[in-house]
Length: 184
Image 1 (cartoon, rainbow, N blue to C red):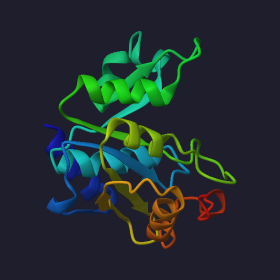
Image 2: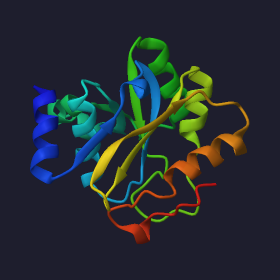
Image 3: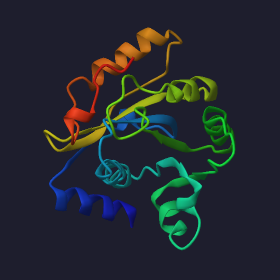
Image 4: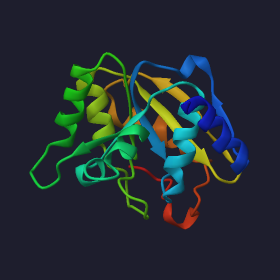
């Protein structure tokens, strides 16, 4: 059902998907960027569903409880109790320990507004869980959503971040003024 829904969303919105097989992984941290709009999640999920990827993402647990909790969980949401001091990196690493298959979407910018630099939690999650990083993207200028790279981090932070920054430099956000292409 999700495959059909993904195709439908992409068709009706005029978006194309680009997710070649060599970038598929059962376990990875998937950077989701640029992230300047609530629409970003819909287009990203549509691509993953079309490809049969059951991507997950972390969200405040208030969304996964109550009357609509089932819907957010169906989308792939994993609720996190934000009322307690939770180390999100450790929490995510434990998710990888508990799951043989996990594609975890992480909006590295941290929020939908302009940020001076990206948060680096995705980097530490991937390193500590010993999983590759996948570069998921949305390009509103060309209406293409997909994944453009999958690689294991080298441990050289600056080198890895430069590779990531180079990949995203030509991607156009829905609201370009809210997207800082200089990520570190």
